[in-house]
Each structure stands twice: as C-alpha cells, then as structure tokens.
Amino acid sequence: MKSRPIPDWSGQRLAALLAVLVLLRPPIAAQRARAELPPEIRQRFNETLQRSYQELFAEAARLEFSPSHIAAMRRILEDLQSSCTRQYRNRTQELERQLRSAQEELKRVTNRIDDTERKQRHCQIQNLRAVSSQARVLAEHAIPVAFENKKAKLELVEKWPGELQRIKAEIAAGTHHGRRWGDVKDIGFRELVPGQENDVKDGQEAVRQMKLAGLMPPEVDNQAVRQYVVSLAQRIAKHSDLRVPLNITVLNSKEINAFALPGGFLFIQRGLLEAVENESQLAGVIAHEIAHVTGRHGHKLMRKATISSIIYQAAQIAAIILTGGAASIGTYYALQYGFYGLGLVLSLDMLGVSREFELEADQLGVQYAWNAGYDPAGFIKFFDKMATTEGYVNGVSWFRTHPPFYQRMVETQREILFLPPKEGLIENSPEFDRMKAELKKVTEEAEKEEKDRPSLLAPVQGCPAPEKIEYKPGQPIETLCPAP
Image (tube, rainbow, N blue to C red; front, top):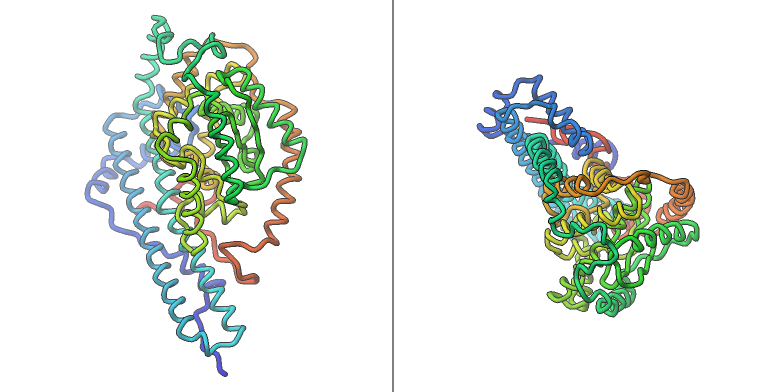
C-alpha cells in the first residue's frame, strides 16, 4: 500500500520553524523610554546588568545613573519581558496546534500506513512535544526569571547606596544586635522554634512514603563523594541550632537542588554538586537547608497538608507528565535530563512555603556557614550563578515562590555585613577538589546509563533530535529575544 507523504520535521525544516520569532510592536511608553535613554547610557546599563551581585554591591555607589535613566531602563526591561514572553507563548500555541494536527492525522491514517511511515509520524509527534514543552518552559519560567534578575540588579544600582549607609549607621550605633536572631555569638545555645525533636517521625514517614511511591531517585554509589558531603554537612550542623541528628542522602539526579524534610533529613542532589564552583557555595546551600529544619518550616507546612496529601500531589504531577503534558519547568527538565523520580516536588519551596520561610532560611543559613568558618558570600555567588546562566533551568527550586531577587540578595548581604569579622573564612579546600574529581566519574556513568535508558519524553529511538531553543550560558537574554 502506498504511504502518504508526511511533513519533514527534521533538519532544516525544524530549525527554520524554531528560528521564527514573532516580533511585536513595542508599546508607546517603551518607545518613549528608548528615546529618553541615549545609546551610550543604554550600553552602560547593558554592561552593568551583566555583572554579578557581588560586583554591584561593591560598585553601585560609583555608577552614577540618574533617576530618570533608571526609570527609563526599567520600562525598557518590562517591555522586553512582556514582548519576549508573548513571543514564546505564541510559539507554544502554534507548536501545540501542529501537535494536535499531527496526532489527529495519525489517528485518521493509522490503519493505512506501514511501519516505516508510522515511525516517521511518531518521531514527528515526539519532536513536536519536545519543542512545544521547551517553548512553554521559556515563556513560563526562563524568560521571567532572567528579566526579574535584571530588574533586581537595576533596583540594586538604584537603592543599594542608600541602603548601605543605613546599614553602616546601624552598625555604628550597635542597633543591629537587636535584629531578629541577632545573637549570633550564641548559635548552638539558643532555641529558635521549640520542638525540633517532634518532627523526626514526620520526616521518617515522608521518606518512607516517597520511596513507596517511587519518588526517590537512587543514591550516588561513590563512597568518596558521599563521605565528603556528609562530612561537610555535619560540620555545618555542629555550628548551627540543629537539635536532631542530621541524616544526609546524596541522590543521583541532575536536578540542581537540595531539600530538607522535617526532623533533619537532608537530600543533596548530584546536579548541585556539579553546579557549585567551590566549597563555600556548597556550604551556603547546605546551611540554608539546615535552616529550614531549625526553623521547623516543614512542620509548619505539614500543619496545612498531610504527608499523604503531599504524596498524592506528587503522583498527580507525575500523571500529568506521563500523559504528555509537562506541567512545570522542574518536572519537564527533571525528566528531560534523566531524573529518576519526582522527589523534587517535596522540596519545601515547591510546595508553596511562604516567602518569610525563605528569608528566614537565608538569614540563618548565612549565620551557620559563617559560624562553621566559611565565607558566607558563597551563598550569594551561587544564587547569582543560578539566576544568570542556563543552570537555573535545572534548579527550579531556587526561584519558584521565592522572595523577589532584590529583597533576597539585599537581606543576605545585610546579614553578612552585620556578622562580626572573622579571620580565615574558607572559600575552597583540597577536599572539595578531590570530590569534584570523583564526581566526574559518577556523572560520566550516569550519562552513559541515561543515554541507553528509554526516555519518557523520547520513547522512539533513532529520531532526529529537535533543535534546542534556549539561549546558551552567559549570553544576555537579548540574544533570545532581540529588542523590537
């Protein structure tokens, strides 16, 4: 029987489709903002907003942008974000329309095609699913995060000089000692929230149900990596307000994340170890998660939702994924990059922990890292890395339901300045470098296994891979969405 011709979704045809941008006419307000901003000033802004938070904290007072220029740049960024998001929403809708059409056509001809054509059509549908999910991820998460980061840095340029003067005045007057949890010399001898020991059973039950539901990725099978992470976490725990034993598990997942369950159950994922650049960054993240335990944030969360209901929520998300709809950036990329389960949905922030909890964990985490002898700025440096490179796509938990970037960075820097000076703060260690060398072996083995493992998003083998449409690490967002 003669096969029907089908659209060519590989090679140049697919690349051409993904290259199409729907450029929309900017609003009048945005056009006026560009007219108000001389090209040389806008170029200075573009260069400034590519700098790290640490650089901007040091340089903001010397940048000397006028209030009118800052206001104009803010309008430009808001317009670019709106336009760019709209482009990828439109692209998503078009790709999903084509996906529905391809599925309907397959159903219509399914009894009249041979196996060769059937595979071609399956590849067509598979690739359309992939690129439409990527476009949705960009529209709903990546683009907003990138622009929120830029706007936060613009706000830092505008407000930090005045904020720094207020901080110096508080230090000079000694009033900073009266801040919440300002008794940092008593870390380990203070009780933040009574009853940590009562959370252990809840944490044990959550871990048990995660494993029963198949939501827990396997552990990293490398003793050197595990021992290093356990040793570092225990060191920080000893210099924190933790009152329960710390149980550390290193998961073999590419998700850039760590999460803590009530009662001291801490999970570090392989992707986080790959992403951190030095020991102080990893110490900052671990200290932040321990702070969720000492602040009993999981207990407060579970007063609103039982463990069973949380597990059920995770199962619902899994069902959405398995039926072809990537429900969120985290679940999409978790599966795309070889995540073994959906344990990340039990991360506190993924379940809607309040912004207050995150700010509390930021403050306490900075204190614990400092008290353990680490440079507390490592946390800011890692946050900046996550917000400004492709890596944040794998680290959804850093941004969903979190406080605005500006508030989070300023509150963290304020706490660092309030801490008493300490000599010899650690940024890196030979042990960290040895762990990284061992981790390469783990990653290589995991990638080899993932290559041969059937994928939920790409069950058909041998299909031409769709073009990736997200921008590359280090490139400004304007390369994804050129300014209208």
